[in-house]
Length: 221
Image 1 (tube, helix red, strand yellow):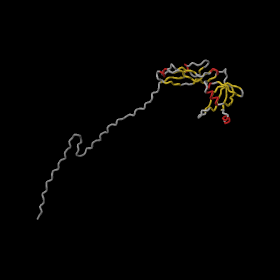
Image 2 (cartoon, helix red, strand yellow):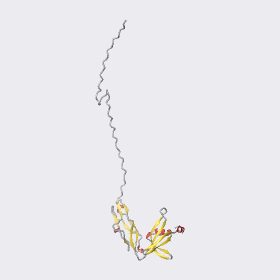
Image 3 (cartoon, rainbow, N blue to C red):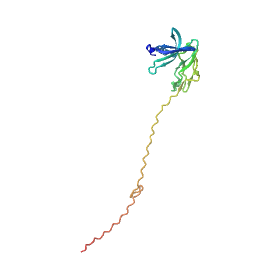
Image 4 (cartoon, rainbow, N blue to C red):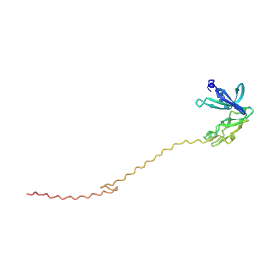
């Protein structure tokens, strides 16, 4: 690995049907160029193996998680007269009625389809016309038209795209204002000498009889 990095190469492996696997070293820049092309991972290209050119397709590759650099690549050697299975991207065409008129949202569910065809007939994409889709309607694989000489292997009942109603934004519940009940009047303490109920006259205290004056004592002579 260290020697390969010094040469700006990465390890890879080439394999095919009924063929032995062969370890190879390839340029990550060239692999990146292939991935960015119109056909992407389904691009057919020649791999030079000891002076012999072999027609291959990029089957799998590993990326470095932080910088996204290619670390390893697997190549599948194909025979131009034998069909192979690959995955092809789905491209949506048009604006659905359910979105444009009815205010719905387009939900793209299945973005790739598995197909079978000869290497030379691998399509760049499969186009799905969604113009007619109304709110609550969907488009299944069975409704798609495959390119000539291409067989779609994905189950026909799989939903590719549908138009759904927008989710209502959750409004936070208003804080319930609980009116404070007026504080209950404290019971009045009936004190001595005061009324027990409002409006009732206070009972007068009985007057104490005045004590008769005592006659002054005369001094004895």
